[in-house]
Length: 227
Image 1 (cartoon, one colour):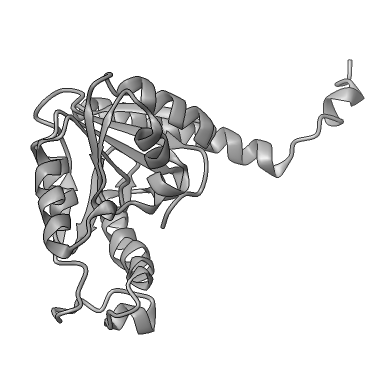
Image 2 (cartoon, helix red, strand yellow):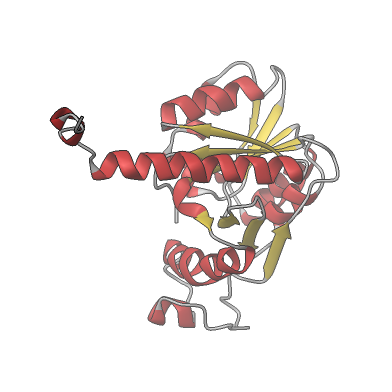
């Protein structure tokens, strides 16, 4: 007998295809993180991710974060500050550069540190670039746990591709947060490997494994977040 004509009427949309590919990609990232002593999660929406992240932070924790646009745009920092369960350390509330630097230093001893990542490989390697290095220091050592929040757009196909993304996508976009800074990437849109006073790429951190199991938790979201 021939195949039923109804079998040919099933509509497969582009969104369905992308969703299937995203699930496969997220599963590969989570398995890669597990191999590297990091815990991975996948959320379909920002709302789901916020709920999960708050559940991962023990009541009474001191919580701080770096300069991530992702965690601000998704409303996570606002939720932390409005909650009576946590003590927030927010550098943006500082009244001077000196006070901001002190908050950044104290944040290295907080219980939970929130950040995004500039890029990551699909097998779980995190790549981050910083100017001062406080965010990178917190990822490496200090806070009891680090929760990394990232949109699916941050995932690259290899460590080398993740480094390229961090240098040629994230950093040249990030420079526009600082109107006073003049760098080659502001003009060209790609890394100029500069060493000038305005450089915001002074430190590059590749996190390929965590010494302490599950200290670093990565929440991947099925959305384009940050840059």
